[in-house]
Image (cartoon, rainbow, N blue to C red; front, top):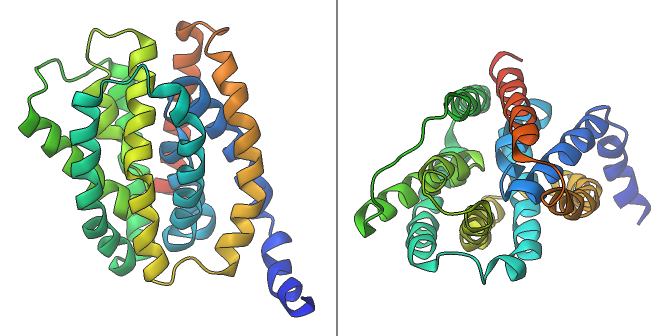
Amino acid sequence: MTELLDRAWPVLADWRLPAAVIATIVAGLMRGYSGFGTAVILAPVYSLLWGPRAGVPVMLLMELLVSLQLVPSALKDADRRVVLPLGGAAALATPLGAWILLTADGDTLRRFIGGFVLVFGLLLMSGWRYHGSRPLPLNLAVGTLAGLLKGSTGMSGPPVILYLLAGLEEAKRHRANLILFFATIAVVSVIPPLIGGLIDLAVLVRLAIVLPVMAISVPIGARLFHVIPERLYRPFAMGVLLVAGALALFG
């Protein structure tokens, strides 16, 4: 036990851990409110703080547990006809994306994550969305792209969010669709880092600190969904995405 504590202490004493906690609070509030926000905030921030190979596994494990927490309330409102093909294709493509995480240069991957989040935030701010139909082949194509991104960067959300949020459904249906999609691929996404040896003691110690923070923040964000108007939430959310992406890209 003493040896274990000695190995864990440098991780606990690292100044980057409090910074990760603050980012986790913001991401948890966004996830509970909107159904997304965990990966697009935490992937660039954790990658900046700890590097992609250390930061992405923490985020993937936390995403799995958060998704399971939100699924029961979302099942009745989600459109499974659209979401399940998206999630199935993403689950199949995730291991290939994980190969990129395991082999790519860490600094290059971190900057790609930051740039990708920055572009995604700008697209959301511009109001652009996909406004066409949602046939099965297109569902599978978007899901495959999301899976590649999930495995390599921890972020499956951006293409799916831009794709799903274009419909005329009410906000409750959008939120439920996103929650069910993320839950569908969450289990698959943690397997490659586990096999590849990326989930070590440092990852588990960081997860033990940030997971309770996320567990508290998500329900608070879910309650805020019924209180705060979307017109006030969206500018804040977009600003957070732009800051997180810029930090990872230029940090």
